[in-house]
Length: 392
Image (cartoon, rainbow, N blue to C red; front, side, top):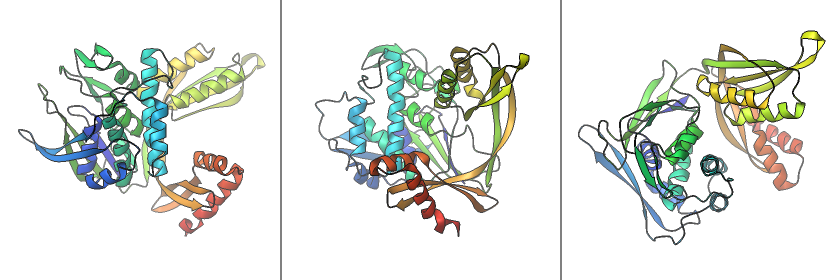
């Protein structure tokens, strides 16, 4: 299993993440060629060696050849740019996921909807290249897990397109809700909205498992000088032979007998959107012989407050029970298979050096079914048939 671990010594931005991926093997010239297929203005990715007083690494800058007349794009514009490209489907989906996270954060901060948000810094051409380029580079590295440590926060104020704001920027704070941070005395913006959106969208764990072997490491530098720390992002590529990942998670549950099914359905969906590992209901018999529902949510400990906020605001319960439990997960990877309906991703689970579980990605099946005006079941069965050679 290949794991990429990010340590934000001096923070994280789109160009710093891109620099780390390039140093780890995502070829800059190939990135330039692939991203040039996007329907955007001409640009150049400049990746050069960088040396500070003690460390050597990479620094990336995106150079725009022609100054665009309009850089305040909305989410619809960005969806069109990405959807009309020739990028792999999984790169398109991941890139859109990052932009949608930013749009939701900006909409919350400015009291509007995601479709009405007009991006400025994040909608600028260089940020589009950073985000899509990072998702493309990540895909090339063929990773199984992304570990992301605490996010450093600066102090004071910063200037952006909307004016002067507290540091970190309001959109960054919104993106980092539920994730651990460390406070610093630095007066610069350490984590940008682009950096926050990329790493929170990618993150699958907070640290690599014990016993992992270091394969490679990269140091990517930002463009301003900090007072007490180097302005760098370290990315470490690790490998583990374990075919199952183990860890702990928090189980939060409560019994409910006076909330309508419609509200409970909405609540379980919102819990999943907020980052719960799982959320489900079980029919139970409660006191006074009342039929009721046991609501269960599994989450990482740092997401506890988000889960509790939703349960207490969206249900009628007066309290919850909390239990820390261990879990074991199969090593997972994803492969693409071709069917007569189009490409479908297959999730493969590995146990004791053998592939034991093969599952078509249901979202892909639903999308291909819509595109072909076909039953989802037919697409699912076609994907299952295409998996057969992988089982041998």
